Length: 107
Image (cartoon, rainbow, N blue to C red; front, side, top):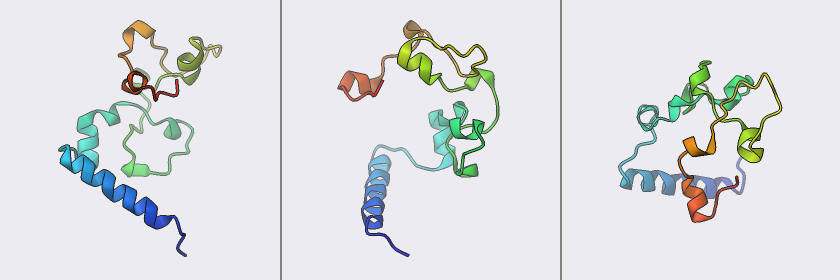
């Protein structure tokens, strides 16, 4: 079964790989770890929903120091869940978002 949008996705993936290769970044898991992507626990793995397995760029082990940031904390500046396992980082500790500087950050 082929879908009409598959060719567009393949084209975008090829362009992305070419762009990363031109920047000197490879898409292999070893390079993902070198970039620090495996330094954050996978949100989907926490809920047993990660379907990428070994191909996932994020960490698949529970480590409180490497938890992703709490979405409620990011959006509202507070979290009402007393048992929240996600990180709550103060604004002055977080570096400025590059997408925010460009005007594209959803937060």
